[in-house]
Image (cartoon, rainbow, N blue to C red; front, side, top):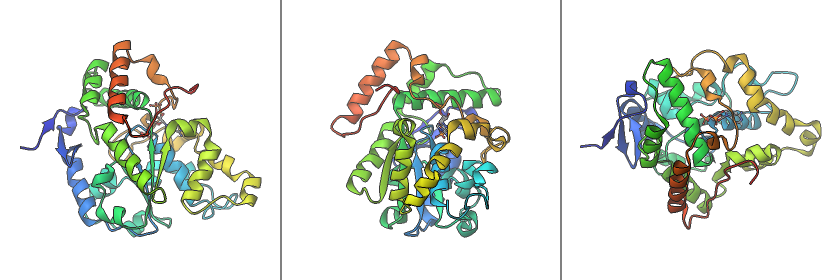
Length: 314
Ligand code: A3P
């Protein structure tokens, strides 16, 4: 009786509607383990995103900012040089709880305070995350770029598993109906947006486009929110620029660790890096898709106060 839809990849065997969002059968088991067994600490930091909104980037930035004094410059190299952002900041429901319903989190989160990631909507987060003083850093992205990024990602996965290509029309239809893992997109973004408005000390709401526009300013904002503001001395030494640089699309993409090998759930690491631009949607979406998308955005965001930037010029 649970609503079910075909998933992007036939190997995933469909997505199911659970607490108002769509989830694969395998993912659902680990979402439930995470919800039931996870106990948040007040000091925890959670990176939360909708897929393809810049999770990889946000993981790298949060990791480097939060732990910067633990791998002081010139002494211990930033672990980002040798490990992928997804190895350093692990997904709870897609990785940690997938392997084990009672994971040893003390060992999994090597650095302290604990830092981990999730794609679960705000309303479905484990209760202790919502009730404790732990902090959540959320990043969203305009839906047109997010959709094209997702379509490119799925197309690469389908090619890798020798599945026929997914046409842009089919993918758009799915996006429009919201029937894909962690969808619908708008409900996800609005859930975190509203929570961040109600409790700005707990949830920092970031936008991919703002980070692209002024990374130093957003990094300082992130550090302040995390309770580890950059000191004057650090700013003079260029630490902010150093973090922005090591986490930049160009740097991360070129690192050997990110352009070979497989991610925890069998996804090649390199496909987390596409073009890393704002406005790439204009190279793909047809005028009628843009029109439908604009209408949908208007309907969903009306009276929310949330807006998106769709190009780097606006
Ligand atoms: P594109 O497909 O538009 O290029 P996620 O990490 O949530 O899976 O999101 C992937 C998107 O973020 C991809 O977008 C990818 O190129 C982009 N991305 C990855 N690392 C980035 C970085 N360091 N800076 C900016 N964008 C990045």
